[in-house]
Figure 1 (tube, rainbow, N blue to C red):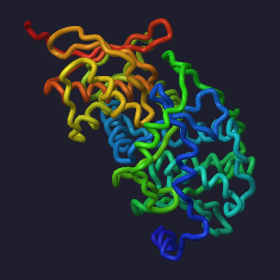
Figure 2 (figure 1 turned 90 degrees about the vertical axis):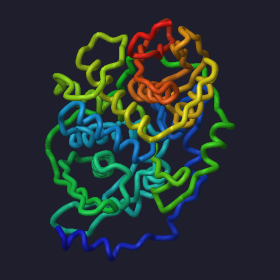
Figure 3 (figure 1 turned 120 degrees about the vertical axis):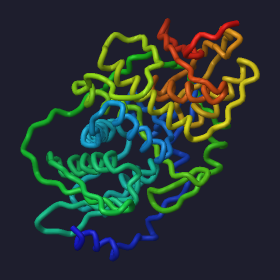
Length: 372
């Protein structure tokens, strides 16, 4: 493996294929309801979120801790299925053939998602794809394996190895197994259909965009990537059958669903997101309930995670009911909202979701009763 990895020293980026910021800004459409839509997708669920790679890594690590299981392989397979679904519902031409140098449009898709850059390693005995600066090891491995299957019209088994943070090798072997094409996964919560483009918030977020290299870009000096909600949903479905209990974490979350395994999953993910967000040291000031509208815009809408439509005060100790105009995923957006509440009031809180009449609302309050 050391000899193989040494080949990275001889790889050089083709400067003629560098991409500008324009393609990134053109692909992702910020909406007034706090969501981000993929202009390249013809799928019903074309929603995506802007996530720092460090945050995603922390969410994933915290999720594994709370579930008490290794989830990397399941995430990779969810990414493979997700990519196949998205490619078959894209307005763009999918990759075709085994000559990766001809995948220019698909390569651009990697760039606009911030996933890294890939190329094929010449080897007569094995199919090996190299990913430089992968945004997420499991996600990128599954996505590139799916692209190879689409391009060659053949199923493959895949494994990956990584000796350095900046280089990843995905090895593929032909698999004769018949696997049906993925279908759409429905959400379990209502979603606002009232949306239009929000050019103001798009301008604010993209003004800090910096291209470091092909497939690697940052905002405010922190690397980011864009992941579709469909990936989160498929990852969830891959993991639910194996969940029996939570090994750690807090359970200050109330969900309006009956599936016990999904309740455990949402709780684990929400608490992981809550802790990661809380530990990031964000400063939250709430002087009146209406301040939550701006908090939602800053910490949800700017990342495509949802929007706060209105707020109602419930008690003098910070208890509020927040009505959301949209939500990316209850566990992700809810974990962030709870972290903001705990930062604002300096104590542990709890969150309760409601799905009523085509709308989503949450109640944020103290986890312990406070005397008036």
